[in-house]
Image (cartoon, rainbow, N blue to C red):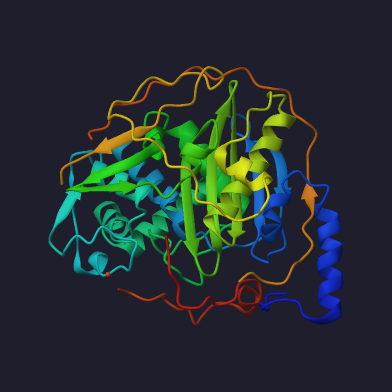
Length: 393
């Protein structure tokens, strides 16, 4: 079950591959075949207002969250802001421990710092691991205590299969989640913090003289997408949670196990297209990355660049009229052997009334190694194998 293989070989492998190819030919997201055949793959799409599941593919299988972890880090930070425990302008000091985190990172030296708002922007754009650890220490006293707070809050949100051990998503054998839990978290970030959700739509973050580009290319390549977060470590593949709104209908999707960010984004777009179709939303012209996926040859082109907008946050406009505004925040300072995937689709739910437009606040605008856990159970060892030395985004 949990044993990772490098590929199928010989006649048996070719036979199984051919059978999968025939089965996938009828699916509307065929461009993501490699994901569907991966042992690391899982996906879910749900309607954001009610949480009704529209598409489910292994959504409860254990996965490593990678930098999707930072969604929960930010959930705890938003709670602290709401409860007055910290302020957007409060200083977050970089400790030696936090500064030692491997990239992706801002590289602030020990004793240096940044504001809470700058830290939020560094997490949603660059996915900075050093900043995530520093935020954890700022809120929880220690990152370990902060991870306990994250796990407790996850349980209260119904994320029953998620356990956190750090604030960044750097590999830890005990830090696990599921596609369902991550989509649930993405949904709750939108519904619980409508005045903070706009941070996830930030396209560029100005740090000193650098313009940091958001890792989430869905923001410019999928019509209606306005968040949430990407992730990658070797053990999980390329992951993403995406929220998109069209004609008053908002969907939240999560997918794990992409072999590249291009494949991941194409697959997420295809799943969202099907979800919107099931909710009765008229189809849109294919986005650049979806159009490229449908056109031969099946090379993986880079997503088209997103034009830099201005630093002002406009009030939301229904996606039927135009795309959500892109934000620019300024500040000073291998694939494994195929395994069958069963897709479950629930009956199409009644279409909810359009959510009232939310007004958002104006925002001002290299190492530790993976920490092995030698006390994990044999059941965990069978479900999740230890990854090689990771890189992360």
